[in-house]
Every structure is written in C-alpha cells, then in structure tokens.
Amino acid sequence: MKNIIVLISISIFLSCQEKEKIPNDLNIAFDYINEKWDKKSIEQFKNRTEDDTTFVDYHFGIGLNIRNYLLRNGEHSEKLTRFFDSIGVHHYDDMSSIIIESYHKHLNNKDIELESQVNSVKEYWKPIIDCAKIQEKKGLEIYQSYAVNDTINIKMPVSESNSVVDYPCPTMDWEYDEKMDLSIDGIIIEKGFSVGETNVYFTVRILNKSHEGTKIMMSKKNVGDEFTIMLRQTVWKIKTTGNNVYN
Image (spheres, rainbow, N blue to C red):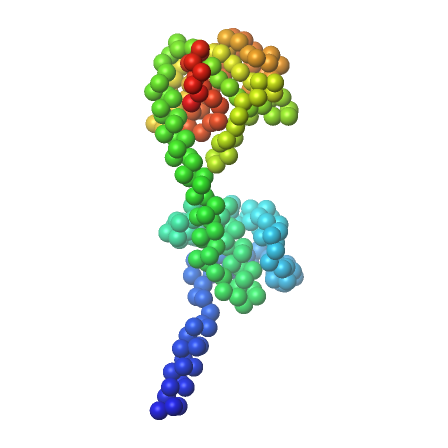
C-alpha cells in the first residue's frame, strides 16, 4: 500500500513539473528563426540574459524580419496571425515580441510562459483601448455639437520645436499655457468622416492666432489658411467662441 502511495505521489509531482507544451504555431516561428540565423547567432541569443533590453534589442533586425516576412507575407502568415488573434494578441509588434521571448526561453529549456506574456500585452493595451473608447465618444459629441460656418476656439499644446502637437491615448491630461501654447479662432468650413463613421473631423479656416510663428503639426499655417482636426483622439480643447466651458 505504501509503495502505491509513493508511486502516486511521484506521478503527481512529475505531472506538476511537466514542461509547458509549446503551441505548434510557435514551433513554426521557431523553425523560421532557425532558418534565418546561423548557429553562432542562435548561441549568442541563447546566452543573453533576460533583462529589460534583451528582447528590445532584437525588435528590429530579426523582429522586423519576422513581422514582414513571417507574419505579413509568409507561407504561414494567415495561420500565425489567426493563432495570435485567438489568444488576444492583435498587433504585429506584440506578436514578434512574444515569438522572440518564447524562442529565448525555449533555447534555455524554460517554460515559455505564454499566458503570462499575453497577459502583459493585454495589460499594456487596456488603458489605451479604454481611453480610445472615451475619446471616440467625445469626438462624436463634439462633431454633433457644431455645424459648418460655426466659429470655434481651439487651444493646442506646443512642443519645444514651436509646433503644435497632439498626444495619443492614454496620455490625454494637458493644461493650456497661454505663454507657450497656441490659441486659434477659426471657422468650420467642412465636417465629415474619414474611413469609418467614428473617425470624424473638422476642416477649419484660421481667423486669428495667439502666436503667429507657431506651426501646426510642423506645417506653417497663417491667418486665412486651413487645417484639419481629427476629433476621435485629440487633446486639443474646442469651444464656441466666447464660451468658457471647454470640451
């Protein structure tokens, strides 16, 4: 009886220690890297320590090669992208990063920890996705609030190169500084949407500028010139002229 208990215990222990199975789709990617790298390159990569820069250093080079010729234009591209989509990874940069990190772990006989890698990707994108949804709704509200020929005021952040910039999600917090930033009064001469119905925009003709020499997105714009505001994701502050409540 004791022997049976010991055997069962050993069996349970070994099953707990069983190495994580590598999905066949990642094995296809590993085979691709094996074809592209010689033995010396593989050995050098294997001996790199897993620090903050190991996989970043390979983002270009083999990473770019993987994205262009394995994931986008390769024999197995459709199969691989379908696999990554199924586990919640949708960006080519993330796909190539997971392939490279998994390959390094595989070379060192470690579990690839795929679930952990995927969770890290999802955690990175969650605040960006949540912010984008809020901004999309906000952009539609602004779009519906104004009509062609309405006069509006736009406040815009300005970079050290004296050009208006915009900030992507999730970096949307910004306070206007009248000494540094740009304020424009303009008239909406066109409104519409590009590609999708939520990708709305205004085309505005400039009536006046608070700082004449400041460029808009690196382009010189003077009074009378026109520029476009993409409303779905922008930190630019829009209000009706004379109204002190900003969007």
